[in-house]
Length: 294
Image 1: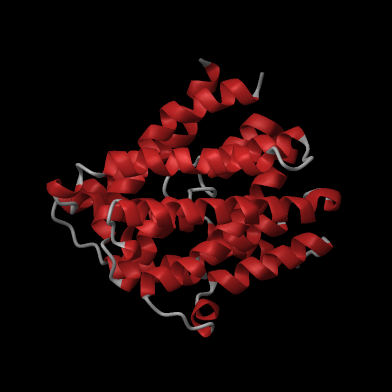
Image 2: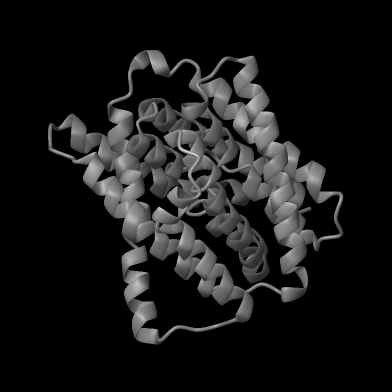
């Protein structure tokens, strides 16, 4: 029961902030989604990723192996997701990335820290970093329809992630004044994303809601299957394997919605997936943790 309340404590703020955005629209106030999305994607989210990477450490002995495991897990997820969209005739620009990219940041990081401590957080950051790279390279190509190699580099999150990984790997530090400023900017990211998500939910058409449950459940199952299948093939520390399973089971990432909104995919459908899959997490994650913490 304590695990359930731990998950609930992490997930509840997500819904509260989304409710603010939802209520804001329902009361008729103006909300410029394009401006807020640009602000989040250009400034706040890159700062969040960079600071998360530079302020957390992982044992260099397991860094390379963990990166390889995460790469393979995402490869499995991507193949299954592609087959899934083909079988059920889903629009790939809208639904492929939600099936691949999970909310490994503002949900996954605190959950792994609460469950497995500082070591768990270190492993979780690796998954988070790779999720960001996948979302803003492969994911950007899928959603935008462009396959230019220059396009991902135009998204500030990509160089911020790569630079953060370099700082983490070599244990470099930046001046405290700059760290404080970046931390302040990063604090905008999660509230901005979640309030904007609530705005999108307020604009969802009812007809879109009926197929979101099946896709949301499938996304979680696919992630767990890939993590278990790949994790058992490597001699990772127990905490690393458990973190991989938790992170790959995370609900649809809010960044999937932001990409859909920015590049003209069906952002309302993606917003529905984010909400439903996050709600499912309240029930799925305690069950997973009850097995992993035995």
